[in-house]
Image 1 (spheres, rainbow, N blue to C red):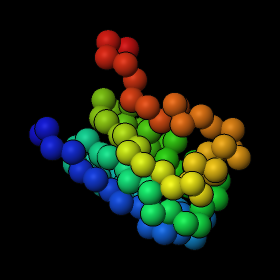
Image 2: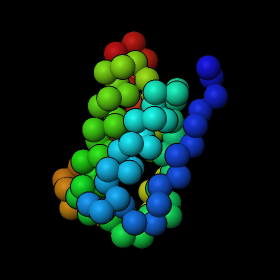
Image 3: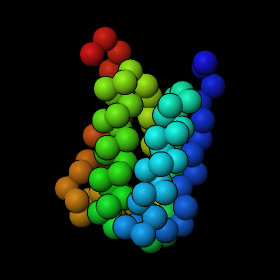
Length: 96
């Protein structure tokens, strides 16, 4: 299946919503390639960063594809605080 699914994240991406986001990401990845739209994220903590990184790892290990297509300033700042470069979210180069 070549169609990508876009998962739009909720306004709140913190410890209270982590399990729901993780479940949505897992279900989306099971169905095919996923684009994560985080442009509307307002409230965020490091739990969100952990959930996204885990989903990226899952996609890579399973040969799937997860791509972050946009992050709000708040979401980008959470990655900065966690010491995670947004380049860590990029899909691996072909042939790797």
